[in-house]
Amino acid sequence: MQAPPVAVTAGPDLVLRLLDEDDAVALQRAIDESRDHFAPFMPFATTDPSGLAFRQSWIRQGREAFFTGQRFQYGIIRAGEVIGGCSIDPVDDRTASIGFWVHVEHVRQGVASAVAAALTQAALEAGCEIVRIRHDRANAASGSIAARLGYERIGEEPHSIDAPGQTGTSVVWTLTRTV
Ligand SMILES: CC(C)(COP(=O)(O)OP(=O)(O)OC[C@H]1O[C@@H](n2cnc3c(N)ncnc32)[C@H](O)[C@@H]1OP(=O)(O)O)[C@@H](O)C(=O)NCCC(=O)NCCS
Image 1 (cartoon, rainbow, N blue to C red):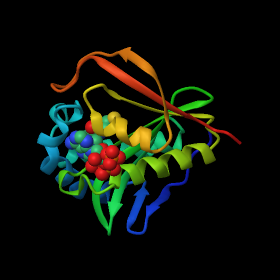
Image 2 (image 1 turned 180 degrees about the vertical axis):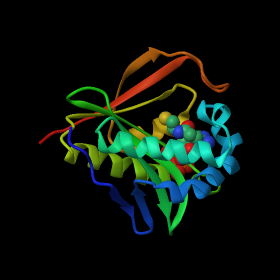
Image 3 (image 1 turned 45 degrees about the vertical axis):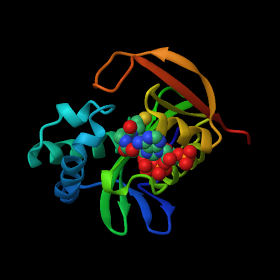
Image 4 (image 1 turned 60 degrees about the vertical axis):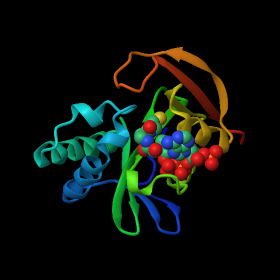
C-alpha cells in the first residue's frame, strides 16, 4: 500500500492526524485518564510508563514509522482535543489491519465507529485490498463496530493473553475492496 494522508477527516469535528512531539502532553493525559478503561484489552495501558519523555519518543518513532511506510499511526482529535489514537498497520502487500482507542469520557458516542470508517476508507484509497479488524472475543464493542461497517467475520484464532480482560481468542473480521 502507499502511505495514507497525514490527516484524515472522520466527521464534522473529528480528525485523525499524525501527531508531533508537541502533542505528547495531551496524548499522555488522555491515556492516564483512561487507563482503567483500556487496561482489560490494551497491554500498553499497563506497560507504558507515564513519563513525558517516553511519550515524546513514542511519537517520534511513530512519525519515523509513518514516513518509512511501516505503520501509519494517528491521534484522534475531537474539536481540537486529543481524545484517542488509531493506526493502519500494513500486514502484507494486500492487507492492512486497523486499531483504535478512545478516551473514556468520549466513549459510546460513535467516535470509534467514525474513526474505523475513516481508517478503512483511507486504507482502501491507499491501495489496500483487504482491511482487517482483530479483537479479543470478550471485546464486544470492537465486534459491533466491525459488523456495523460491513466487515465479514471470518473466524477466530488464538493469541497470547497480554491484558487481564483477554480470553486468548481473537475474532478476525475483514472488508475486501470491491472496485
Ligand atoms: C472499544 C472502543 C474503541 C469503543 O469506542 P466507542 O467510541 O465507544 O465506540 P462507538 O461509540 O462507536 O460504539 C460502537 C459500538 O460498541 C458498543 N459499545 C461501546 N462500548 C461498549 C462496551 N463497553 N460494551 C459493549 N458495547 C459497547 C456501542 O454500543 C456500539 O454498538 P452498536 O454499533 O451496536 O450501537 C473504546 O471503548 C475503547 O477505546 N476501548 C479500549 C480500547 C479497545 O478495546 N480498542 C479496540 C481494540 S480492537
